Amino acid sequence: MHPLLRHWRFLSVGFLLVAFSAVGQTFVLSLFGGEWRATFGLSHGGLGLAYSAATLLSALLLIAAGHLVDRVALPLMVAGVVLGAALGSVALALSVGVPGLVLGFFLLRFFGQGLMAHTAQTAVARAFRQHRGKAVSLVAAGFPVAEAIAPILVVALAAALGWRTTWWLIAGLLILLAAVLLALLGRHFPGRPSLEVDSSDEPAPWTRAQVLRDRRFYLILPALMGAPFIATAVFFHQVPLAESKGWTLAWLAASFPAFAAAHLVSLSFSGPLIDRFGARRLLPWHLTPFLLALSALALTDGDWLAPLYLGLAGLGMGLANSLMGVIWVELYGSTHLGAIRALAQSAMIFSTAVAPVSVGLLLDGGWSMARVAVLLAGMVMLASVLAWQGLRR
Image (cartoon, rainbow, N blue to C red; front, side, top):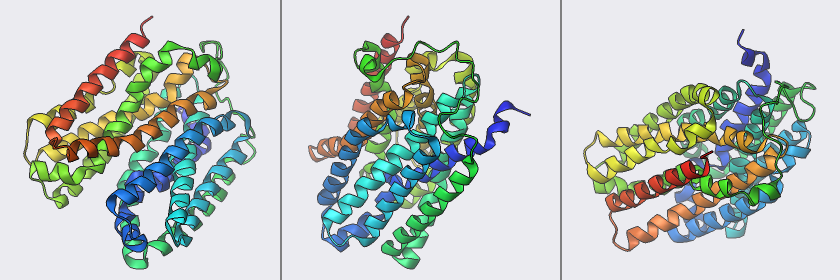
């Protein structure tokens, strides 16, 4: 039996937390944009502003709250973040004005996108040593599974029941999820688990204050922000992208399974690669699939390009999700992992708030999507060079 199989309950908790963090992700929330604009009389810009404001606030608070996973018993932390997301779902279902909508956005972005994924990946990265890369990749597989399933279910429910009832159902499902996760944890993981107790190869533990004074943190952060920034920027503006390439929206939507499939494939091999070579050696190169995808968008056209670019983006996203769960342990130890990882997680959430606005302003200024792709490709190369420089011994 593979050593990881002995801990299937613990890994299942992480996988489910990551998968259900989809309730706070843009690819789910954006599906209700039309209903919310109609219900609350918002323009595209008004809805985007409300969403960005809630996202920025959640990123700021994550810096303060991220350390809780280092101190709070894991079952209590798991229950708290899932029930917090359920509360956000209730807030959306009950919202009668823009303030209620923003409150729902904030709770779902903070507890869903932020703390649910953060808790899962931090706990797993801390718990495993020898098979850390594989364990983190298994848990991160919740992302592509949710990307493949959640939009279909949400669209079907909203069409059949309406958006408010859909969010009531999501709230109920999250409450049920909390009970299932607590049952899986049982009493086996009452606090901070260490399933592979030998941590002799870890560096001496760093505090968050020490990390903030370390130049390596600032040099590798742009590379780790690259994947969420690029994916959010391009996906949010997929309509002008499709128009510029002559794709129908139906064809673009039909090509999205390539993203989820490639994401899952990437996770399947990135974990073993990390365990063999280490996250530090792989990090400067992990944005290469995004560089290829952006180059293709800048240089070519044709229907075949849609699944190709989405597949390459999926490969890059899988590498990024695996590395994000491991790199901080390799650099700074696991004692204060939650607090340290929260710094990077909040920076990435911030990037997902800034990306749509930044690219939108460029498009409003007359830039083509091909020109935007060239700019993003240049940013990828710069971020990769900075990461390489920061991780040189």
